[in-house]
Length: 250
Image 1 (cartoon, rainbow, N blue to C red):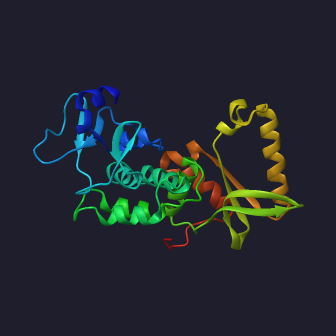
Image 2: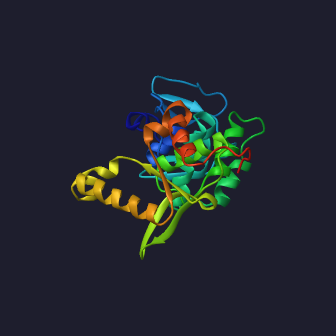
Image 3: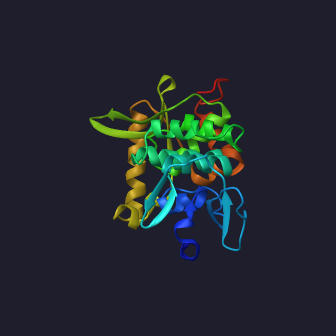
């Protein structure tokens, strides 16, 4: 990316996955080998360094550390269009969570897509699903899998009080008293917690036991269980706790 920036200078505007990387947004899935940048009519679509992509007619541009990119809201929608729904939702969730864009920004970026734009349906779905309450790409991935499978919509990051202590839950289905916890594994490292991993595991176990005593069933899954086979293992774990498709989309 640095080589492309040096060669093209102010003519280079990053888009898609390249813009997401520069903006610090998650990119779920493979990162393209070529730098993705804004293209216009008459330009070569590919060189040895860059791949030029058309986004909205006049996309909003931001400058970050001397490099031009599409605005975060446009970048998230482009990820959904050119990659996957999961990629788009994860990026937009972070954008909204960190308040680098608003839902109005996302709506405006969606409205700016030209008629018949590639991946427009996925962009609309990503805008619909994006939620500022999501706190990790794993939660975004999990929520997309739930939506695609037709599961009931969960409440996000809900705090419950059990035995006088407050616990914040990744996902909660109120009517059936089931909570879902995405286990990212990274939280069980010394660098992540500043404590011994065994202590972190033990603390998590005590937390789960307390939630069960409070009348909540706890479904838990890992990244691999949510990522592979369209989240089949995660969906099976939720089904064991009574969370099954209800035939309604959120």
